Amino acid sequence: MTPNIHYDNREIEGERIEFPKHAIYFLGPNVTFRRCTLVFSVAARWLHLLSGKLIDCTIQAKSELTTLPWATMNLRGCRFKGRFAGNDFGFRQDLDDSSRSGRIEDCDFTDARLDGCRFFNCDMSSIRLPRWPCFTFMDPRGHAVELGRCEWPGRFGNLIERLATIPEGTVAVTWHAPTVAERMDTTGEELRAALERAPGIFM
Image 1 (cartoon, helix red, strand yellow):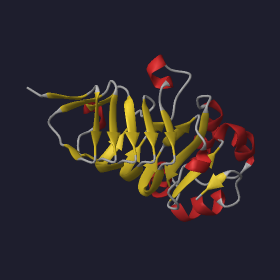
Image 2 (tube, rainbow, N blue to C red):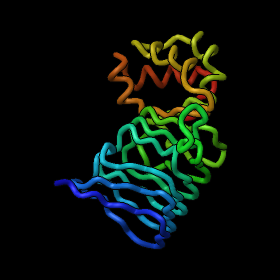
Image 3 (cartoon, one colour):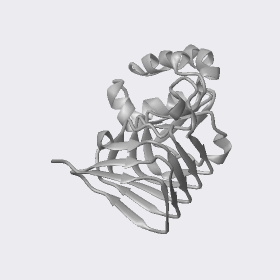
Image 4 (cartoon, rainbow, N blue to C red):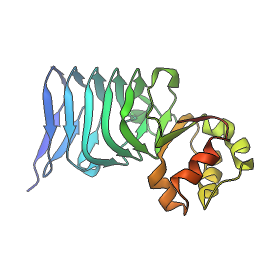
């Protein structure tokens, strides 16, 4: 039987905490990790982020963390390492109350690989993003019309069309060029050339 491991109603400081496979983890409610190193080997489906604070922590994904919603967590001064795909950061007003409690500020993703990761309702000037081969659409809803007028290689235009329909409050979306280029029948070189001509891109 798979064990359930709970981190709730307490503050943990200065520890290295491993989240290996073969268990189900619950972070929260009301947990604070301060200056901790959290190392995730478990798949995202076994990781439940209920509510809490991560302050000045290092968050390391040993394997790719996929479709993990951080919208319930308050992240401040954290450093992310490893691969993250389809993760959401910051609070969301379009979901339930628990997803409105999260925050993200002063976090560093320069040592992370992000693919399809979204940032909601936060000040992106306080977020350090990974550079190429990752790239970020800043204010994607605001730039959607201009981006739609650009020429894109392969089927990348299909992704651009979806930018106009992403949830309100989305302030940035980051992709990993080699990964998305393969899915969209293009190359990283062709994609970079197009991105360099487009508005609102950080890379």
